Length: 105
Image (cartoon, rainbow, N blue to C red; front, side):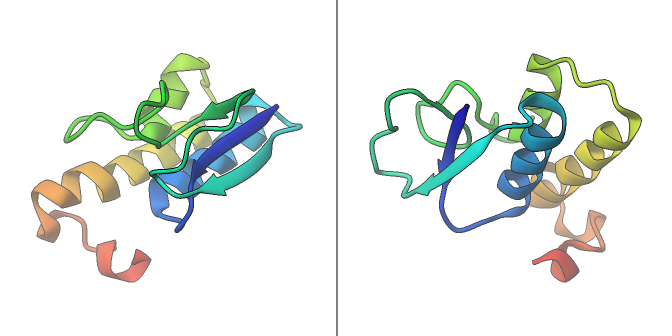
């Protein structure tokens, strides 16, 4: 299946691509587009405006959404999801809460 997301990698997008390839779609192929580009037909879009699979501002990451939608129950994938959530959601609310934010970028 062809998946498409925004260019300019970030923690949630990179982790989500890993989750897709590892647990959801072993044959996944990825394309990267500008947030304003149209979503190519036949692609599953994530972390793009108007995509079904996208973060919920201040509440959930794309990774969180993928875990739930595809019922991924692997303990390592879930733990990584917690780290992504801490970095993307919790650190946005309280930057001092996540000590590794500066290290990760």
